[in-house]
Length: 84
Image: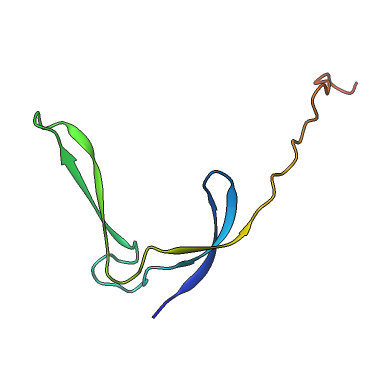
């Protein structure tokens, strides 16, 4: 069963998406959606983390709406002098 939620993600620009949510009572991932496994290189140093997704959810997203870019809060050429 899908547990849908609306989420804002930032790819090349910000978009509103509809995604699945991991099952919160899943005994395998405890609601995280998967398990992270750290691994090392041939010297035994940390080399990264692999993510193994849990079968309790699917990693899909449907783009609903691209969000507009917000204007800059400080217009160019605006003085940063105190008002007094």
